[in-house]
Length: 208
Image (tube, rainbow, N blue to C red; front, top):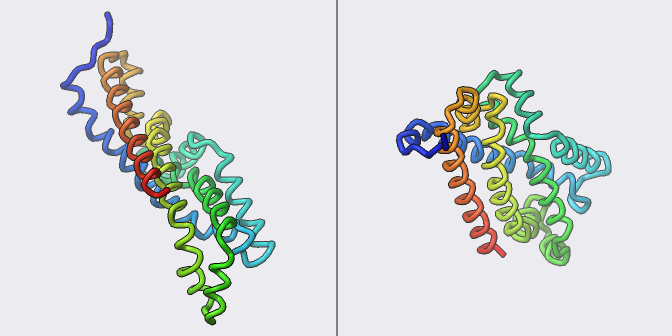
């Protein structure tokens, strides 16, 4: 029998679908906050010394090299099944991605603006706020939004290992051969992914 989407199922999957979106948003938000200091120590022109520069590069490489599923498994073991494990998995996996691109943006800033602010006698914090942050703001918004788009899809996958969200409902439906529900869930996921891609593209166009 050919599976058909069932409108009644959408009410059942609304909560796990919303949970998936929450995981992607919270995971991205935590990653963005944590990636900012990493980006500054991973950029040659803002890192205090070679030791901190090496540490920044290590964090970027390490968090990016481990797949989100592996991170999800680790946090499921630490915190148990559920959305908390999903948020941590998405956040840690995203730190290296966001920090790497922000570090590259920091290294490409106009140093003339930095020197102009320093010439006024400004300290490091003032230089950061008035000379560096305004130059990397477009990259910050663009990278953060793009990573959220990626994390929406990642948040659906990690549910297969018990890290919360719609992936858990999808796994249960597959295991019970509820193919009508499987199709309904896939359609819902597709709708969310299309929306996230469109929103991300819109924001990135606006900040260019």
